[in-house]
Amino acid sequence: MIYVYTLFSGSSGNCVYVKNEDTEILIDAGRSCGAIEKSLSALGTSLSRIKGIFVTHEHSDHTQGLEIISKKFQIPVYMTSPSYDNYVRGGSYLQRMARSCNVEYERDIGSLNIRSFPIPHDSAQNVGYVITSGNDTFGIATDIGHPTEIIAENLSQCKKIILESNHDIKMVENGPYPRFLKDRILSPNGHLSNDKCAQLCAYLCDKGVNGITLAHLSRENNLPKIAYETVKDHLNACGFENVPLKVAFADITVEATNDYSYPYPIK
Image 1 (cartoon, rainbow, N blue to C red):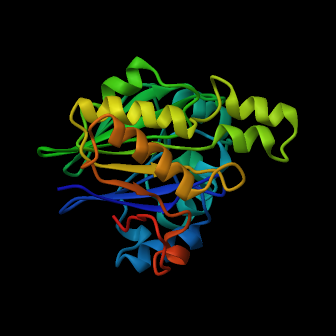
Image 2 (image 1 turned 135 degrees about the horizontal axis):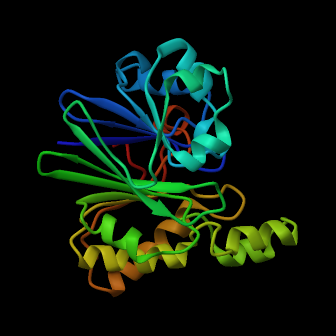
């Protein structure tokens, strides 16, 4: 069985902890080494037990902690060749630990199988991951400029998924961001809106996905309540009212003990 915890989620940093009975990995390391270690400690584990870090893309909110983690823990880091070439510096500790991979690659780490698939975004290369352990399959896809057949095909093979629900379009248009930044967010290589996320969720539920966590919410252009209700209302209208829907913590160590009126997940 696969257990998944969103340690950090959003523009201030992203990191997902994945484990089964004998293997532990991270998807991204977008906060400091100390912050990630603190979050793992709250879950009863440590970076010393992580067997691999799988990077979605090279933006800092997904890679911030990699250099110090590489220096302190010597954990193998897997990223696509475009991200590697764009981000990894010669002579860095990360260069010693990072593996440059094809855009669509597959690795077995312990008893977990991890497979990547491409996602459109304004990075050198962005990917999502499908993780398999026995008969259990989990998928993650964030920083999605627009839904594609490849994204839908890969996530439809999963039982549970983490999917980006980044922004409310009206909040973006009426918010304080300059026009060029609004255009970037709303572009085909930007981020996935709540509305488009809802449509993709309904399609995936029709294909058999039976658990969804909304992630990478913008602090400035979204609210967990808005993201949740937008997706939930659409799922209900499509007949998927019984599919569990949750919202990822922005910071599990800060928010996990607080009382919220909408469903936050621990795992």
